[in-house]
Amino acid sequence: MAKLGVNVDHVATVRQARRTTEPDPVTAAALAELAGADSITVHLREDRRHIQDRDVELLRRTVKTRLNLEMAATDEMVGIALKTLPDCVTLVPERRAELTTEGGLNVIHHRQLLQRQIELLRQGGICVSLFVDPDLEQIKASHRIGADYVEIHTGGYCDAVNAELRRQELARLDTAIRAGRKLGLGVNAGHGLDYRNLRAVVALGGVEEFNIGHSIVARAVLVGMEQAVREMVALVRGG
Ligand code: PXP
Image (tube, rainbow, N blue to C red; front, side):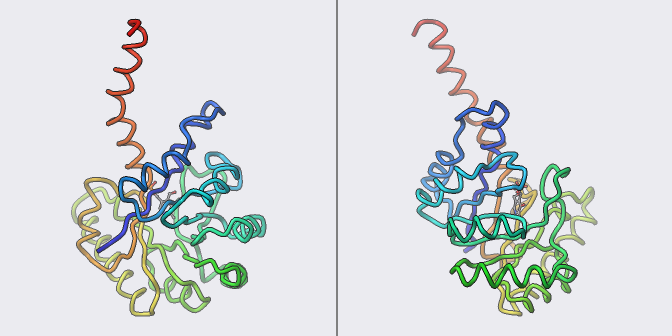
């Protein structure tokens, strides 16, 4: 059975909108675990736009399942990972101007840098996953340079604008998942998955863990809105 990793970055995005203390992604992570999440993911970005160093330190001490740290393959981030020791690191490409991670890593082009960072992380006892497009050459390169896992980018499938494109993208995902497993890699998947499009990818089989953030936080805001307003209405009315 596939596992669910919950990405709580967007909880921190709401907090950082006011540079205040709530909502706390550490509390959200604990609630996600109580609800059955198999792991917690945060992306510590170089510009610290949502998750802060303090969050990663606290999560390391409080997460009871597994902590997956998403990060760019920079010396600064590898240093933080070796100090905090998450269970797993997922290396992702990062550009400051992007709204979210836009594509997979170019493992072939950056193989020397990535291989060195993977070695350092693995020496620290951290398992390493590479976020890649559903592209066989990138998956083979990930295996060659010593990654434990690939996380296959599902954005192309999620963004497909019609049924035919969606079918093609799903077939690409299927081929990529099978290729990764055949090489002996663990295969995770994520990006853009939601309550409607997930089912077809689960049905492919072969994915160990799905990493999902935006759609869960978006739904949490809406399903929690009624209770939050009721509580404030009671206070306003002197209840
Ligand atoms: N996996 C990776 C590597 C990501 O960068 C992200 C976005 O931070 C996710 C999964 C989760 O994507 P989403 O927020 O669209 O569910």
